[in-house]
Image 1 (cartoon, rainbow, N blue to C red):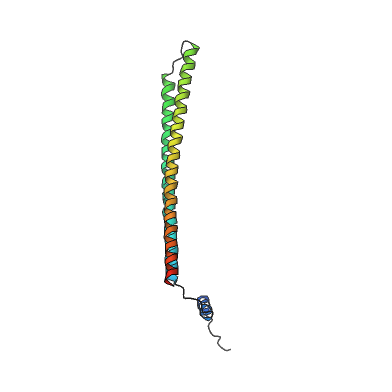
Image 2 (cartoon, one colour):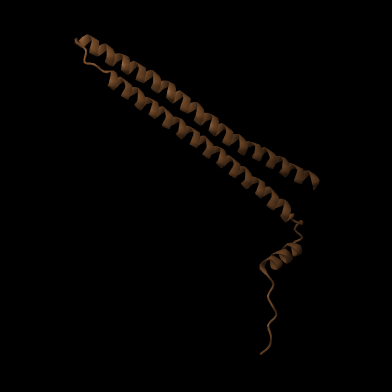
Length: 142
């Protein structure tokens, strides 16, 4: 039986196809470097998002602990008042403080989330800006 010639690899066939069509040379290393930078930016952005989420969760945990401590303190100091007006006054004061604390905490958490997401988006925005500059520079060389 006659020995069949070894077939070309896919890359060899693709390269020969490009030469036959007279396609411009492609700098594979530059393309790989470009995508490596993209992946590094995505990783850095993901790390920033994860760190932000972690700080939000830690702060929320702290807020819940503070609320539990405040409720516990109030329950321990609670004495049944002699008249209904005094009871209503204490309950109204507790409701007012709870509402104010909730608003303050919500605002603080929103600020933490905004800061975290801004940092994450800024990393990606910088990479997009750099990528566009790389693309422009590649076209200017030709």
